[in-house]
Length: 176
Image (tube, rainbow, N blue to C red):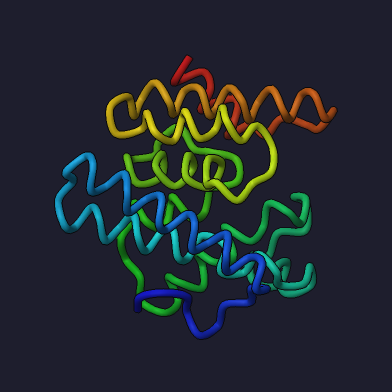
């Protein structure tokens, strides 16, 4: 399966975001010279990470069985579960998708690349110059940019007065 799965629920705006994420991941994988298997994993994670982003709350809660987390955090776990049900077995891809909204301290390079691409893709309206600078640095400073992206996302969460997810705090404690 390449591109969006047939069960995806995405608006045109969401599809455009996904395409920008995939393009950024492709650009980085080419510049970094990662192997073909890794390139495919990054591409697939990019295509599938928001496959259920525009699904309704009832569907997301039914897919995940999660009645507690905020609905905005459920599309990743829901998509990972659907992908598993359809035969996807690559753990790095599934974990990247499952945790792309909050981060995960156990991620491989695939999860870290997706987390950065989702934040740094050029279609987002905020901090455009700063994010473009960071995106350009990924191939040469992958870990340093990843740390900076985690920090920026934490700062935004605090500035907006939102709660910190335990997974995000654990991730920060690993990369700081």
